[in-house]
Amino acid sequence: QVQLVESGGGLVEPGRSLKLSCAASKSTLDYYAIGWFRQAPGKEREGVACINGFDGKIYYADSAKGRFTISRDNVENAVNLQMDRLKPEDTAVYYCAAQDGRATMNLDDYEFWGQGTQVTVSS
Image 1 (cartoon, rainbow, N blue to C red):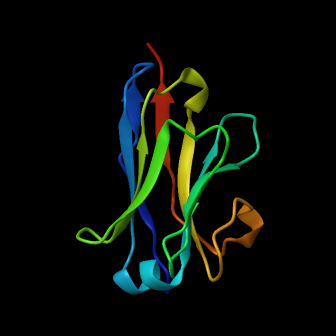
Image 2: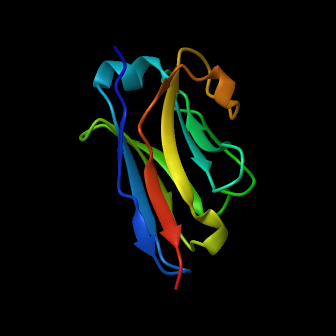
């Protein structure tokens, strides 16, 4: 059973930073690719960043490049999403997901999902 638990969301002012965490077992992180996705009100869920389990290769959506950093924390057994220089358009529910394969930005490839964490960027 793959369990994913997101944390770290909240209300933050534009230009500030926030770090999200996706906690999972070590075996999950070693085997599964982990992706971060987000869904804004009235919009479709979209990929933000993802990381392979087997080689740690990382991919970013264009909207995340240069501002967001995905990384694996081997002490906490988590995949983190560091979000810097946040903008109001980053406001969304952020989800992490796991898939048995190579990391992709296609949400249909992902089998297991966390419950989501709300990020609100507003002054």
